[in-house]
Image (cartoon, rainbow, N blue to C red; front, side, top):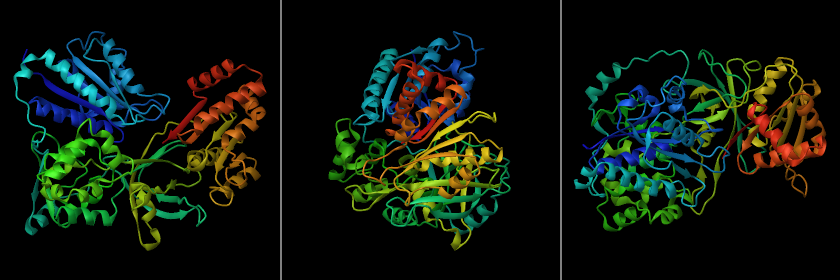
Amino acid sequence: MSNPALLVLYGSQTGTAQDTAQRLARQAQRRRLRVRVMPLDDYNVANLIAESLVVFVCSTTGQGDPPDNMKNFWRFLFKKSLPVGSLSQLDCAILGLGDSSYPKFNFVAKKLHKRLLQLGACVLLPVGLADDQHDLGADAVIDPWFASFWGKVSTLYPTLSGMMPLREDEPLPPTYTFHFLDDMQEKEEVQLRIPMDQTVPSQSHPFPARMVFNRRVTEPLHFQDVRHIELDVTGSNIEFAAGDVVMMRPCNAPEDVQQFCQLLKLDPETRFTLSPTDNTAVPARLPQPCTVRHLVESYLDIAAVPRRSFFELLSTFATNELEREKLAEFSSAAGQDELHNYCNRPRRTTLEVLADFPHTTAELKVDYLPDLFPEIQPRSFSIASSLRAHPNRIQVLVAVVCYKTKLYKPRKGLCSSWLASLDPAQGDVYVPLWVKKGSLKFPSDKETPVIMVGPGTGVAPFRSVLQERTAEGKTANVLFFGCRSKSKDFYFRTEWEEMMEAGFLTLFTAFSRDQEAKVYVQHRVRDNGELLWDLIANKNACFYIAGNAKQMPASVCDALKEAFQQAGGVSAEEAEQMLATMEKTGRFQSETWS
C-alpha cells in the first residue's frame, strides 16, 4: 500500500484546536508524509469520499455547539439524505478538545464520532477526549492519543517505517516568506489597495464602530474596574436581538509592540509582502503590503500564554546550549509539569518568554513569525442594549481583567485592557466589530413570564431583553441580580428602579459582602420558591442563567430544584426531571463562561 496523504481538518473557536491540528501536521511532515491542514468550513466536504486518511480535531463551544468554522460542515454531515455507507473508503480519527466543568463535555467530538461510524467510516482508534481541567491540561490526553494514532498509521502503511524521519531539532520550512519593500515599491503598492464595500459586517469584514462613551461603572476604589461602553454602528446594516453577542478583535499594547520589535531587531515602519512556500493562502486579514507594526499590533498574539507548540518550534532555532536544553525540556512530554510551573501557573506571556531566551530570540528568522505566533482571536461580549431603546448603538458591559501572580507585572486581559485604554474624549476611536447570534432565545409570546438570574456582568444580556420587552409592553419580568456591594458594583441600578416603578420588573438583589453572612443569587432563588413555582408550573415561565461558570450555575439549579420540592411538593427525582424537561424544551437556558 502506498503512503497516504494525511488531511487534518479542525473546528476551532479560540485557536486551541487549530494549534493541535498544526502540531499533528508538523509531526506528519517530520515523518515525510504529504499533509494538508485546514478549517472544516474551508474544505469541500463532498470530497471526503475520495480521501484515504483524515484526522478531525474539534472543540465544543457554548452549550455543546460546534465552533463557527465548522458549522457548514456540521449541517452537511447531518443531512438525512447522506447514504449510509458513503464513507466506507475512509480511515479517520477524531480528537476532541473540551472542558469537563461544562455539562456537554466534548459533545461535538462524540457526536461526530457517532455520525462518521453511521456513514461507514473506519475509525482507527477511540475518540480522544482532551480535558482542560486535567492538571497537565489537554496534553495529558493529546500526547498518548498522537502516539496511538502514529502507531495505527505505521501498521496500516508499513512502508512508512522504512523512511528516515526528520530530526526533532531540525527546523521545518516556514509557511510564508517575507519580501521587504523599499520606498519606491511601497508607494506603488499602497496605491493599488482599494477598499472593498460589504453588506453585513463579518469576521473577514468587521465594521469600524465609533466609540461613543467608555464609563467606569464600579466605585473608584472598588478592586474591579468594569466599563459600560457604547459603540455607534450607524450605516453598518447590523441587526441583532436580545441574547446576541458582539465580536471584537483586540490590539496588542503599544509598549508590547515596541518591546517585541526591539527584541527581534525589527523596524516597525518597514513594509513587506508575504508569499506562501506551498499552496497555502496568505492570511486574508493582512493587507499586502503590510507594515511590521500592523502585523505585530493587530495580528500576532504576543501577549498570550504560549502553548507547548511554541516551545517545540522555538527549540529548533536554539544554538545556545543552556537555552536549547531548557526549550527541549519544555517541549517534551516529561517536561510538562515544569512548563506549567514556568508558563501556565504564573500566566507568563510569549513576549516574556522571548525576553527569557535572548540568544534563541536573536536567532529567529522573520519568516517563521506567522508559524510561531498564533493569530489574535476575536473576543465575544453579550450585547447589553436593545436597538428599540438605543437605535444604531451597541452597548457592552466589560470587566477589565487584571490580577497578580508571582510575576512582578500584573497580568492583564488583552481585549478588556485594550477597550479600557480607548478614550473617545481624546478624539475619534474606532473598534472593528461584527455581531453573532447568541445561544439565549427569548419567548415572543407577550404573556410568557421570563425569570433571569444574572450576577455581575452576567446581567448584560438581560438588560438587552428587558429593554426589548419593556418596549413591547411585556410586564412579566423577574430579575435576580447579585454583586458584592450595593454601593460599589450595582450595575444599572437606576434603570432597574425605573422599570420597577413603571411595573415592568420584579427585582431580587443579593449583595454578598454587605452583611456578615454572604448572600448570593442562589439564596434569593431559594427564598422565592413560591413565586418561581407559580410562574414555572402554572404560567409556563422561561428561566435563564448568565454569568461565571464556576459554582454559580450549579448552585442556582440546586436552589431551583429545592424550590420545586418545597413549594410544589414534588420529590427530588421529579424536580430533577422537571428541570431536564425545561432544558429540552428551551424553557431553561444558560450562557456561562469561565
